[in-house]
Length: 312
Ligand SMILES: [Zn+2]
Image 1 (spheres, rainbow, N blue to C red):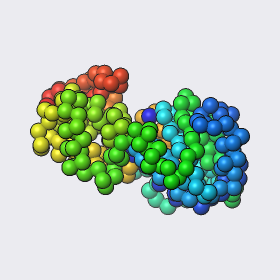
Image 2 (cartoon, rainbow, N blue to C red):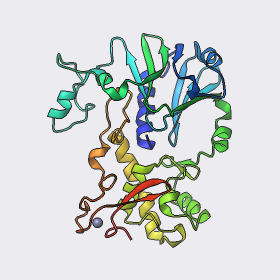
Image 3 (cartoon, rainbow, N blue to C red):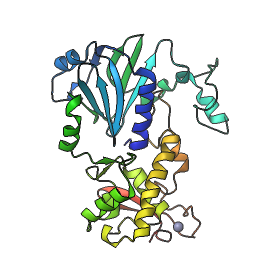
């Protein structure tokens, strides 16, 4: 599931590419994803509206539209948003071949010029599950690919956004400047018996961290996921807090983790999977070379990965 860095990558892309665009038409072959209204009304309410700004809270995307409405999109398991244009944006055509051949694999480095042998990332199978399309002016489209079809969309009043976040129990965003060490400590103190591995995943407390980054954060901080919040020393709390900010920031820089379906708005994968230390590395030697193996266990129905030697 896309987590904070993946959603942040998409939101930044949307602001770069389609901020100011006008929605001319909406198409869907899976209207069940639309919540709170019916397809026809949803279409009508978005028609001729301008996309003013894309925003993110946790794993939630909000497209603020002219006329006072915002579109809330949650990508869930396999959803991703693709921006296409005719003629295509140069990044659409960056070569997968070039990615394999260069030392620096990110397609976003370099000049982004087109080449004759270029293949569009949009041709990748993972980008073929288009169930919703927003047609935009200047021959552009915003297309929603979602293999598992768990993603949801809802129109709401922009001015009621704060109330909506409270109703939906969406906690403070992990990369927000309001999420400080003092705030983190206060949140930990409010849930003394909770296990830190579960606390980090709970979107109603801190939003944006999912299964991938929970394991990476706790490994970097040297703290076992089954520790109760009340057992955490002051220095350990600080380590977890700093690891959270550091890892999420680095993952945003790497345009997210594409260990499965996640792709950016060009249909291209992120690169943080190349830097994962413990996530899905169970039975492999600990990357800190302590001599132990990375272990895996279930916590809150999801696998958590850790090293029993390096994490206390
Ligand atoms: Zn270790």
